[in-house]
Image 1 (spheres, rainbow, N blue to C red):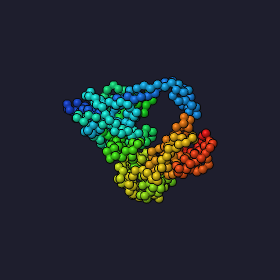
Image 2: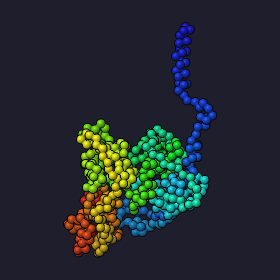
Image 3: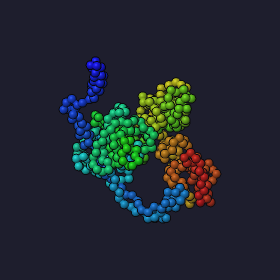
Image 4: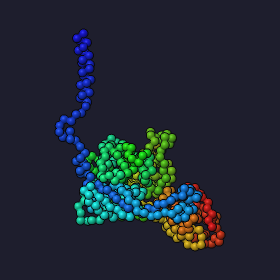
Length: 469
């Protein structure tokens, strides 16, 4: 009987002892006081609250104003009701990243603002100049006007150094309550299933991000900025543990492009791919003998694309850029977008089951052939419209992908009705049965027509026929 009791005692004792060894208990005063406080004290002084004021229109809105057809009949004080202009206040966050007061934030935080003021954690306020608004990446740069003040700043760190599960902090001004610090982990890298900006490539984190956090930094455990918090997934408007940050690599490329003067009317001038691509599906991967569905398969290549000059062909699968595995088209766009213009990107393609190493030079969109921009004038439906011959630079400016030639509308006509029928990005294919290939043909065709104008435009890959009197 005593032996049984002794054996039972051993069986019960050792599992408990084993469990006790696995539990980690603070062993000294330093471990008991383990805290993020030193890290916050290092970074928080460089995080700014951004206060903006912008003019907005508000008033009664007729329910038919958003209708695809009836919407053209409603405008300001007409059938849509009277609209009034008033000054709207908004808030966001940002972070100072250079000694001379360069502030990084989101483009949507300051776009359209008439007044911008930043406030530091110590309560000091400063006026800023807007340096750049790059809507494609949803990033913006500002610089503090006062040159005689010593400002705190933090530095960037490649987000690629992070691993899923690493601890991160988000710092910002949620709901305007004041500077707030939240902690979490990196939930995922390279999230591309979103539609937040033109480069859908984000760090996902469960650190609480709320309205007002936009533009604030995502910080690694060594006090470096690895991303700019920009969006959340939410059903209630508050944090649900799914937040997204723009990787620091994109931030660094925007800063570098601004410093090098690579700025156009629509923001940063980025490397031009000149290709059409799609994600590699499981079926495509099987047909190509690939082990897994990764990469971007090219379906079409522009005649002057740098990829074509490098030896890439339609049907090739791009699987790596500068050593980074390419999971999908979004990552391909992101990786090339962060290569400085003039530099060479090392790519790996898959062709006929073999991997081939190639070098692609990052180039700006070529402004060739000449755009021959023309402002249309005359007693016709397109009076006041601005048109250009298509080339890669023009295509990028109006948001077209893969179009090599033709005449594109850069700015719509002045007429109230016609200005809603012809919009920027429309390609004029025919006028009164005559094929259009040059801007001069448009002017001639419109001014020789005595009656209404029959126009065929290409919009979103479809042909649309319009008859304008």
